[in-house]
Length: 366
Image (cartoon, rainbow, N blue to C red; front, side, top):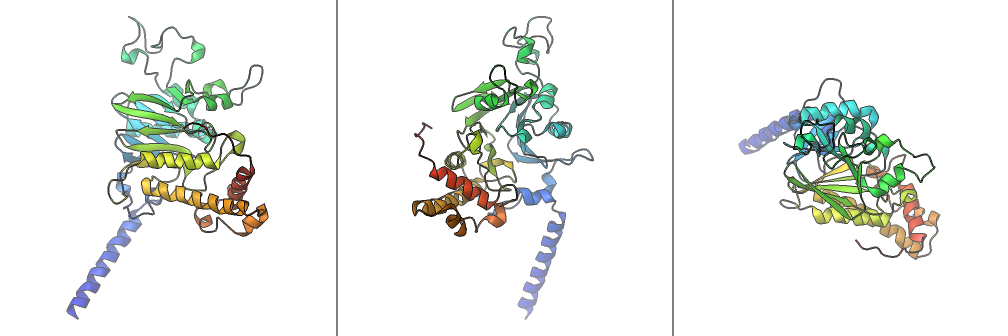
């Protein structure tokens, strides 16, 4: 009886402690905790922002932080050289984003990486870019005697139309093509929002803040212009809208996206990530929307998409109609987690069905 009473007292004390911890957790804890067995990060790690700023700054790993609470997540790498951003949020949130960045570092913004042609990711390019400093100018000693940081860009006498001042904005060239327009047509976006440095290869690499950073183009995923950023020393991957833990992956066929490309991109993330122990911790993944992930979380997300795709494919292979496949409810297991009014399980089924019914495209080298 005494042992039973002692055990009951211990259980009561544990429940009381858990209740206090739960009461102290903020909504952000729900965003960053994993549905795996890994412990959620503590609210105490949040970085204080000025009153009235709705954003939150969360340490991710190494020199990388995540600005959450806005229209999309922003990954921030900081160090002695300066600040690098993965995505820029919206123009309306730019002032709040700058406040959040200044809470992490007093160094200037030198680089911005645009991951997707969605405006909630690049709308802040102009304001954040202008607030930044081109790292090839005077601060690195690359200008002539008597020149100022805003006078001559480090690469030579580039004209003002090439925007030598401000942060350098990287993107895949497909993103620039979608923002701009053929000669004589009106561009979709003003020049101030365009990236200033584009690449068309599978990868582009830079070294910044003593860290190698890989920009990886993932063709035909959410769109045909998606880019992931891999911080090799910090062991963090920022995926843009390839991963959105708040809904099913959105596949934009009109802008070159595909289900196959999303699955390929998720497999690329899994190839990069390495767990520390028992599939927990290790490489951290910052999605375009939602909570911080580890490899096991990405595997779960990839498996969800694979299972749904395979269920729809089975119906197509059996000659079933679109409505017959929907009657099978291939997304039933996951709708509670990922179906939202703007992108429901039925919409995902339609996208998969339409893609599977299309003639197979020639394989491309990866």
